[in-house]
Image (tube, rainbow, N blue to C red):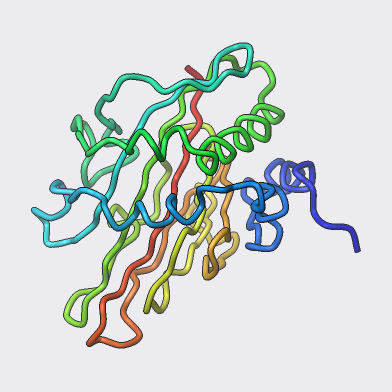
Length: 239
């Protein structure tokens, strides 16, 4: 059986509005052996800033954020640091707020791993919408922490859309965690599918116009030990 190709993922996105890619598939598509800085890339999740907007509500999450642009000629460049903004239509919990987060570190933003991931998204999402040039790209490093007395909430806003065109969610690490099932929903609310990102490089790709998504709370396997779920979220929106 032939290995899945980027075209196979695009077919699934066109047909279903979402696609789940296993770590084995994504490692091949991203040419993981060439990602020389992957250990440092993954380790950078140990140095994320607090998400103070959620901490005020008793939910603990760490993150860093960056904005890029994919220009008409395909060049991907980093934009000046700026806030993340969603309207209340898409985020009833934290909408209509300019949220400032610590920036993605320059070494990570310019490193082989992130640049390869962004190029993969540019090529894949660009093939689905060839009329779009340029793209606004937002990159989010998320760490959700779970404790014995408090589950971690990957999507505290509930089942939602992000207000963009396309989304990639890539698992980077999962330590001492149970649950965290991704659910995909039609606009009328009925569930279209579900899967759990378990291994580094497991990924979900979403057409944000067509489907809603959420992730169930995560809890520690061993309540006496630290527990976290690290993901990279990349969104593409027509600029």
